[in-house]
Length: 321
Image (tube, rainbow, N blue to C red; front, side):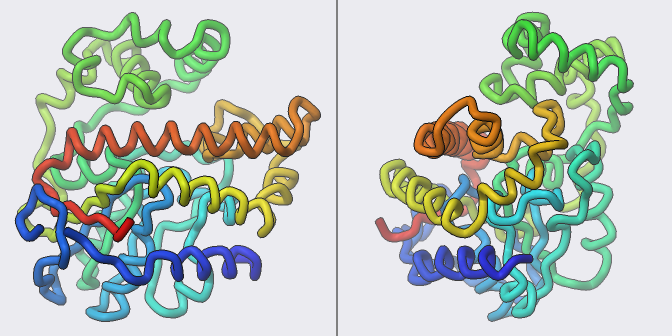
């Protein structure tokens, strides 16, 4: 963890220290969090830049526990500043796991994540699981079908089609039931559903209907989801990306330039394609900044929509605007 990244995360944490929320029942925005037992697992979901990590750290410091990453990109070791991974200072204040522990070219899925989380749930340490990858939380609390891995040649074929025709071509070949269940605006989710269908001959929805019990039922947790104001979040996103540039995001992109492959999951970090395009001479830095900010806002919008659809029974948490 770089010193610059540490300063970045510290400054972001200061912005969201005094969190105030607005009603008291699950499903409504809250002014205060309900009482949380010190041994109760905590789930904290929300869109990018909303302040999840700071709340997780506060709970860990106050009550104890280990902060567990539930972000699909923060598992990789090649982005630090750009993905806002917790700095060394935070890791010294409370234990953090599953951050930056995978190489840039690792094939890492929700199944891999669940297999790594499982022993943590049995370790005796109280987990505080936080991140923006909604599928991780759904799989954790509702179960995950044991789908065979995608053959490499099939994935290569899918990647080639997406590059040539766009992910919409794969979406058009999915069954109606599967399409109704996944985030059809998320190219990775669409491609995954297409790969399952073509690798197994069974729609993803069919696999989901035969899902084993969850590792951590929702009823056994304190589930918190950040439900934030759009304008408040968009402003934070713009300021945060500017700060990331000041603290070395472009240097991180430069370090990834020679090995950049848009098909790799790690290279789908928000802002990475835009900074790489700038380094390749395809756009100015100002254009890259603007494009990355827009991409982050669009990503956050998809996250908010997904969370509101899938997490209606979670405790809604909104920082003061």
